[in-house]
Image 1 (spheres, one colour):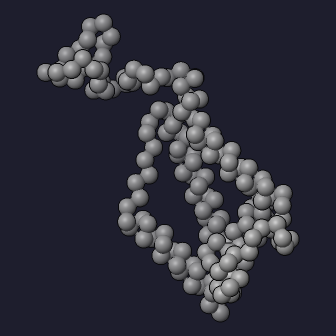
Image 2 (cartoon, one colour; image 1 turned 90 degrees about the horizontal axis):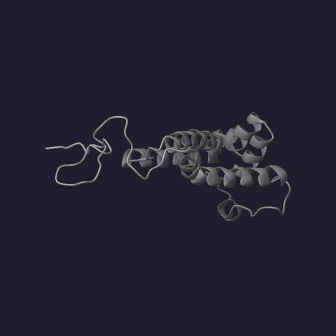
Image 3 (cartoon, helix red, strand yellow; image 1 turned 135 degrees about the horizontal axis):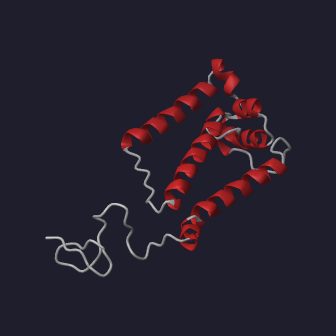
Length: 167
């Protein structure tokens, strides 16, 4: 039997005096709905965005086409094989400067990654601002699909007919 606490109008769970979330439109005490609570919930997504913006600003300012600024991909250096990340810095540099065609030419998967990050970050911010939990439950099918995409991209860009995917 569920009872209503007459003082606070919170629906309580059976056998306890703890408030529940059985009534629609009610929040649990302590979660906060004021501006301070919203800013606190947005602190982590804001920090992640600041780190990503800082990294993109650095790559935009320091040209990866000039040798000596960034380390060389060890797989490319020792085997001559392009990994899925090869051209990622050049792609980010072109993306920062608004040259989407060059960014796609340097590393198309990286540009797709930028767009996926932007969508997931936006989803995260909206959920955090509303005080709702954020869960990205990636199952084995999703992880295998991403792995297969990266494997196909790597193989195709290293074959003779995949020269258009070279950074």
